Length: 126
Image (tube, rainbow, N blue to C red; front, side, top):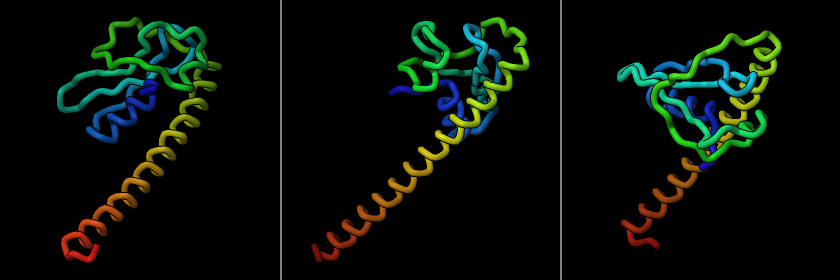
């Protein structure tokens, strides 16, 4: 499934709690998002199998894998990169929120339909 570091970290944060961490990407002048699990102190993040050719490829997601720990050197980030990176994180965060909201509504609607059907089946009305 195509994902990116922000969506992975937000999903983990919603599921298990913990902390969201930001740092500069090692390859581009963009923020990079990691998740720290509070219970296990395990730092995880979603990475591409190889370096992305262009920085905006991360917007569309990629088929990557979950990596534990982060041994990359964190470099300082200049103010222009912080500004554009923050805007991209806000926009992508809103996209994540909207997609989760609609997925939940559809799941609830489907569950209600299934419950109604199973109730009718038990009563022999269907």
